[in-house]
Length: 470
Image (cartoon, rainbow, N blue to C red; front, side):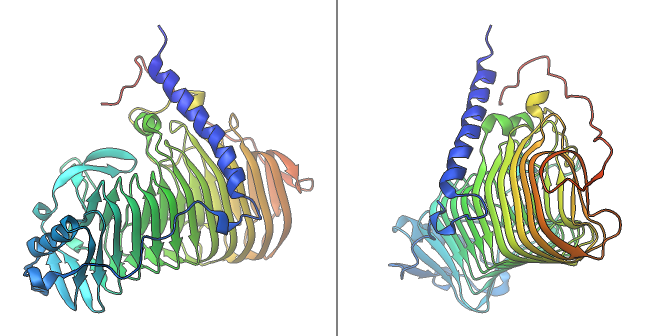
């Protein structure tokens, strides 16, 4: 009997891969990428709202000690049912548990206004939330939304998560801890001109959302494992002018893990990151993956400064068992310094947790295509490019590295790449060969030193029964 689930999944995957080429062509994802033609929508309407409700008029004390949750939620709910507008937070510290945004409603934090999360887990309801690419039971975030449209948070105030809430699920406490801001399945989201502070958990985590504008945020999540912005199965995202310093990734792009993520096939795509400054103390500044089972494509990173990272400025990562694709990645006009690992790494062989139900066989090896890097200035990076952890059965199709200058201690290592183009590399200070390759074809590699073949693990076996979402 024909397996209809697998047939449907293969059709969806094939359609997505074919569509990627059309979209990439339309957007011009190459060295001449025309940003003005991006499909990213403009920010939601910024004209003066028809309705402005002050949380103090609903009983909020703003003294940092009284729980203002009910008053804040009443203001938000009334704004929503009256057709939308702004909920205003004047100067003060508003202690609150989780609050839920409604459609057509924006929170406005005036100068010296702070939303402060309570330390009590009971103040954060339990729902289905995303954690490392899987849907699990967990606490909702301090500010959250489900199925809402045209929502926003604007500053210049501050949002602070309580340090008592940070951490990760474990056997004793399997519930995911609250994130700071988390819209789920929402459209047209605006976050602008405010600052955040959190610890040991993600700060901003849009999931299954479309048309997101994040501008001029000052994000701090240091002292432990906590991402700044996690874009999770979202489309049409603009991140501009942000200053992000974190323990874990400053920005991470994800799309699900294992057969669950592969079956849902909710792709992260059309993401533009520009004019940002990044610093990290535990992992990478920008991590692409490793949860990539729904696919990631059409990402532009430009005009950004990377000042510190425990590993690499940009880390593209996945593993066999994820399936799907990572393609059309363009990075240009970057300044990179303070890296403990290097500028760039690809690890498509063993990054992240393997799923309990991985995508098996050849289909489970991610397809990677069209990674382009140009106009990068590096200062004393330990490794310029570590690009050897690529599966030989699915080489990287299309890779360019152009106009790279500065200083590094070790050069470029590449393996299992087709259609490479390496030119105008003018770095100094390195020892050993500038370029070493194995199984690489293309331009600019004639003088490269030879590397050993890449070692890979045996294929993931097919399960006894077909996977079913449940």
